[in-house]
Image (spheres, rainbow, N blue to C red):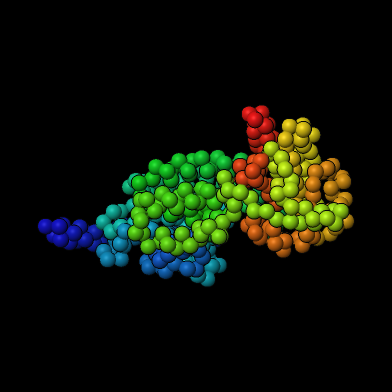
Amino acid sequence: MALLCTLQSCANAQGQPIISGKIKLSPEYSPILYVIKPAHYRQLISPYEGAVIDSVSIAPDGSFALTDKPGLYEKGLYLLEIQQNTGRYKNEIITRPDQENYICLVLESGHPIKFSAKASALNRTYQLENADAENQLIAQFRDARAPFFQEFDQIVAKTPKDSVLQWASHGSEKIRHQVNIVTDSLAATATTVYPIFVAWRLCAPENEFFDQPEKALRAYERIQALAPAHPWIPELGAYLERSKLPVLKGEKMPDFALPNPEGDTIRLESVQSELLLVDFWASWCAPCRSEIRNTIVPLYQSYHAKGFNVVGISIDQDRSAWMSAIKKDGAVWPQASDLMGDASPVRYSLRFRYIPCNYLLDASGKLLARDIHGDALRQFVEAYLTKK
């Protein structure tokens, strides 16, 4: 009876659309929708890697209907993509936030999906007209990124078109916090793994988990609990090997030794305090200098006597520029630098990519928080030392 039902389901699916809807075309986009089947986790939004398994032409009015083909659409994650006219490859993926040309969907033969979207920003604009719980959750993860999209638009509007900066993949600290609250909640309550896989490829498009390692590990644990035998789990686990991640909250910060301006060696463990801010900066980094003058100096003046200390680690190469910046900014706390710039071994051992970057440590040297700046840093220091 079960086999008969399965055969009947396949027969009913034959010739019926599995994906249909309307895509508002733009002159710069080709009127073809491609279906990509990722074979591995990394291929979910990796350009040129997934295999093209199907396609459909989009009519001048934007309508399309892709015929269901039993045997082709086994249940799994698929990418729907539309390419620019100038593109040379059917499976190219654009991950610039305002131009994402793909949609991640769970497809299964016999389960049709209908949606509408704009070709110029497929992922950002698609709206499902009928979908199961898994695809609705994937759309919710996408919707959670709305503040990030808006912030990106504002930055791009102020930046010359030919020099859009290599901006942090997920926006400012405030935006990341807003998005994390929503995505963490969604992932914690998800009952299937596909939406979480999609969410994590959006959170870590280069499979780098340096910015949010604790969040990545929570998602990984949830995936393992939901589908311990899923073939993508070992691959994701390889990216999350402990040796590849930065220090986690609650762990002791690795000690390191660097020269100070006087030519002596300063060790991290030698800088004792109730609350220690390890601040990575550089003389050429305008946001770093602003943070020092406007946030760290006032905090040091107000709370140093109550147990707050700072050690500044410069990612500089020019000693005179380093010395001048320390003096101009009033950074009177301990300073150190190997003057190796981006090649500094300390930077690689801690696995951070951008500055300003900071770490807040307790009296035992354990990590309390990383990369909090401005008002958030001020509030953290005040609250921590007040409760002591």
